[in-house]
Length: 413
Length: 185
Image 1 (tube, rainbow over the protein chains, first blue to last red):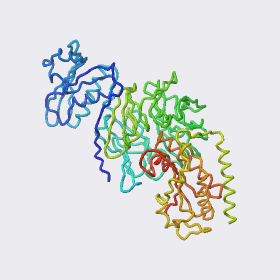
Image 2: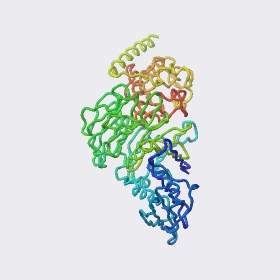
Image 3: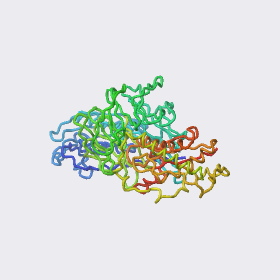
Image 4: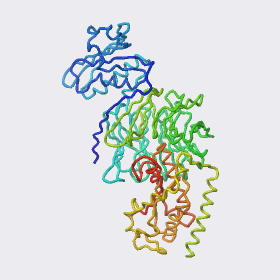
């Protein structure tokens, strides 16, 4: 029905310069490459972080693949702090092993030497793991390159209002997309379970909204809510036992929390205005949500047990779709001002809002689990696409996906 | 004739009632709404849309000249447009709502789906809520004219099913809408 030959291509765009970034060179690995250029994938991953400034291949003075071949003076002269080299060996049919070294190029000392066995079809995954190891070694934080993303593509079918909606899961760089569910009716709001094994989403496949939870490994799914009106905006509690959601069964959209073991509902909000888009605090004790009870959509904070919500955004005409940063200190949100909708980051302690993006139709922000980047939906030349931006706003990376408009991204834990 | 007058009187009450119930909310349409004007006037393309295929189902059902299958009759217009971030029915669409409400009040066996939609701007789930409020505004006005709750089903698709692909105010004003759909039996 759908030709989902979704091919992702990557263009990293350094928007503000990265003065404090670590200069690093990832030399193409030696030996037989099983279809994929491992070092190229590692370089593209690290370039997406504002922590690194990756040397382009054309500027490399030599191509060493073993430690004894390295002439550190050449790399030092180019201002490279770190150097990564590697070698791939074949170890049986379809089996490989990559041995790689990370050097402090200034001191000429080896920081790490690691080897990873892998099957040919795991090449990209292996490269992402190498990028995660380098990231951790040099920044002290966990990398997110081996994580995954979920998103919805919308493609036109046979007529102007015949559309095909597909929920996909792909690698964090947009490669290896796989279909999770397809429909001629809208699919919305994918949300990863905290263990990364399931996705909750909204599907209109029965011509009205319903919330499903689908197991990614075996495709089994469960319909958890199909009440009259809106069944929307699913959000997992940090312990994975509860699902916050928006239901309008009582006449207008309110926030509810469902206990997943018995599907019992607890009502959180009670107001005639719109209340939607719940998101959990890191410790599960609080929820933020979007409400227009003050006349325009703004972000409110409420206890996960209910009670009186407290408004927390005041800047701009429109603040919606908030997400807690993994450290719980800030909120990403859609910030509308003077006709532009952009992703903004608000520090919860100071209430200071910083606009990160420059688009006019940016939406659906989702944090990487280490908090270093935000994935969001944007428009470019009339086409919906996914973009990754570093949380400091310095590096932006467009992730183009063929075969339809890509929307509503969610980054896996 | 008398019937039409009653309809208008009821609509006036309906507007007042709608105004009262939302008095706690002050909406401003600063971003784009103020300059939009009568969106329907520029658009006016009601022939396109889900209602069209269903017209045969209603052929022959008459109510004071209203015929579901008549492409130039009072029931031919089935889309109500809205201004940005608002679920308030604009006065120029009261006739459209009035015509369908009169028909439904006189034909209790007929039922409709009120499909709410929003333009693409802003957060998708907020737009689902906005689309539902728009459909509810239309349902409230119809109910006040004697249409039973059981005759109206509300579904909001938010920004997920634009009538017009594309970006910019021209597309947006055609996408902020409620469609009155007579499902085929």
